[in-house]
Image 1 (cartoon, rainbow, N blue to C red):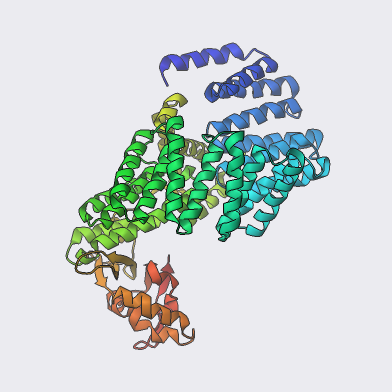
Image 2: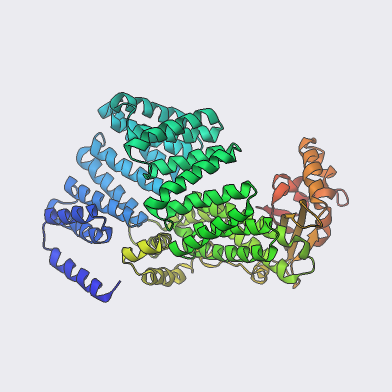
Amino acid sequence: MKRTTLLLLILFTFTLYSQSYRELNNRVQNYFSQGQFGIAMVFAEQAAEQAKKEFGESDTNYAKALNNLAMIYQRRLRFLDAERTFLKTLKIKEKASGAMNYSFTTTLVNLGDLHKSRKNYVKALEYYMLAENIDKQIMGTENEVYAADLANIGRMSFYIDDIPNAINYIANSIKIREKVRGKDDAIYAINQISLADVFAKTGDFKRADSLYKSGLKILTYKVGTPHPAFLGGLRQLAMLYKDAGNLTIADSLIFNGLSIAEPRYTKKSQVFLDFLSDYATIKMMQGDLVKAEEYGIEVYQGLKELYDGINPALNRATLHLAKVFFRQGRMDEAGVMLAEFFGRCLDIRQFLYPGLPVPDIQEVEKEAQEAFGLYNSIYMTRMGSNDEVRHLAFNNYLILSSLHPGKFWFAKTKLDGAYLTEGESDYVFWLRHAEYYAGLRLLSKKDLVAWNESLDTIYNAVSSTAPLLAKDTLFSSTYYKLNFEWEEYRKSLTADEATVVILRGEVNTGEYPGEIAYAALVLKGGENDDPELIMLKNGNDLEEKVFKEYMKSDKTTRGSKYFESLFGEIDAAVAGKKKLHFKRSGIYKDFELELLFDPAKGKTLGQLYQIFSE
């Protein structure tokens, strides 16, 4: 922020503090309607304080002022502040007028919308269901408010894979809206597309196809084809055909989307690049690697211009190019893309995780798993003799391990439970700024300039507070100390520990076309050796024969029968250790390692070692 701008805001603050709540609220509404949320927030904070002075803390006018402030906080990506302010609003409204009124349910829906935007679908569902229960009692079941409640519940049920409830609630919402507004209605069409999404997830192609097309037909003349609702439905319809294996129609639908998006949003927009990314993926599936590369590079370069360097969307484009280069046999270029991918993962984990919703973290980790497998595929045959390659493989594993959403979110939940209160604390200060900083890094470069915020200032607030909090072991282990170098990680292992990383790759060379390969990287605590690479038995044989036989065999005998096939070659490398940390991939995810029986020692692995498995 420029110094002159800051001075102007300070002068505004002193000048406006003497104004009435009504005058301040008018300014809030004016700037909010213009989309100037930064200035609106300044006046909204002052309006809330003035309402508190004029009407008292239990008055509904104060609640209204807080509600406006919370909505602006949400628009400004200050999600923690928004939630705490909405909850305060809710308490005042309940105390002043009770819970059985539309004003109270409006705030419930606002809280649901807030959690939906954060992709916390379980929490959003709770608030939507509370609102639905009250609206049903005070308004009945034949109105648009109740229909919207049902649609909200159905959509959240879809996101949490509760398919029966998703179908029931969305279908009932559609019936009510048809009765109230008729079929010739944009919201009716959007609800049809939501129901189509549910049937697409269940594999019911016919019903999904029919609902998508019906909804899109209505949206075509009600809101126009450039509208985000239409384009979103068109992409979903294309994905329906892609997943069904009909790439020709999927190709045509995505091409139509590009034709609509380019003149309306331009080639530099996220909308256009989303469609182009889908198009590149379809071209790769069709085997047209030239077009897959051409469009993939355009997406990659477009996203670099549009976003900050650590945006997960840019990593997705990077991974696409790595896949294309791998398929073309251009291994060195694929390796460069993967090095960039994992380097970006480090920053995503450090700078973005505190502000990313769980589903987005899951997507980051899922793509990293895919990138790890691709790295293994490229370098599997060179690992035995190339120290650098083995080091990178183990470092990539450490990055991948740190990206695990379950471990991260469990630790964050413990931290929130210990330190997140209505009052202020170092942790509240840190989390507020960490989430905001992450959100700003996800904005487009153009939006960030218009946001009129200094990333350096916010980051400095985060980084200056982190060392204070790092004195707490829970915070330190969750956020602060992350090891991504194998030498540093080895120091954390005691002399009786070893880490075993199972690698799976597809060896794509002229000598071994299409062969699946498995290997294990073993790093031992208390020793100074490099990670040891152990090539396992033929991967095709492991997957096509051993795994199938294992799954069919009796659980009481499979432990001893398959010990040699699955662990025999690793056994000698971990001799003398008591604790084993396993990173499993491929078919090893489905084996019960603890039950494998070592006939020479007369014990299972679970009896011989403490096993910690991911």
